[in-house]
Amino acid sequence: MKKNVFGNFFSSLRFGARLLLLAYALGFPLALAGQYTHTVDLYDWLALSPEMVWKGQLWRVMSYAFLPMGIVDWAVSLFWLVTLVGVLGKHWSGRLLWEYSLLSTVVGAVPIVLLKSQAGLVVLGNAAMIFGLLVAWYRLYGRERIILLGVGEMSVRQAAILVAIIEVLILFFSVGWFVTLAMLCGGLAGWAHLAVRWKLAMMQGSRPTDSERIVRLEI
Image 1 (cartoon, one colour):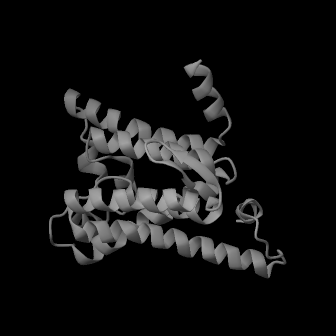
Image 2: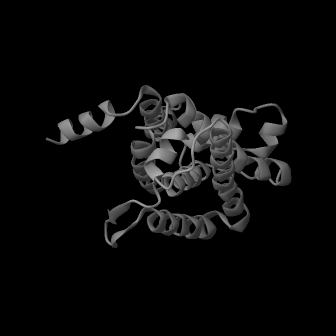
């Protein structure tokens, strides 16, 4: 039964959405395997290091999002990534999902690269991506009702705000205020991206509507 549930879930997603989930899901196990076998240190190669970015290793402004800070961060982030991608990935193309996720990730890295270039700071985790996806969930599905485990029934907007607050608190007490604010920039980038797409859709002749279902299909 469980196999069928997971199989149906993944089969309902487009290839790009499945690839995004697999990239994050496999990042941590592969990093651990590399460390235990002493073959490769993915953290050394992929973590966000402002100093290394300024030396030309530009991939780090994206790759850091696919390695968690630890097993708890990996499990929690994977849960929310599966949840959010499971919703958005059914209506967005794989290309759009990747572009949106990487935009949030890169914008979250920009303040760290610009302002902490000499601090020896290393950043891991997909918080900026999660904030961006939460924004999309909020804007496109906000009026729908869900049941959040341990809380009860609420709107998607309320759930997204609650999850964002919890994520902010976790980040603040684990990595400090500066990295937390930087990761929140990923959510701001997502909001701006969706706002621009909405305006472009309106300029192309789409009629205003109160239906969140129609809005998200246009975006």
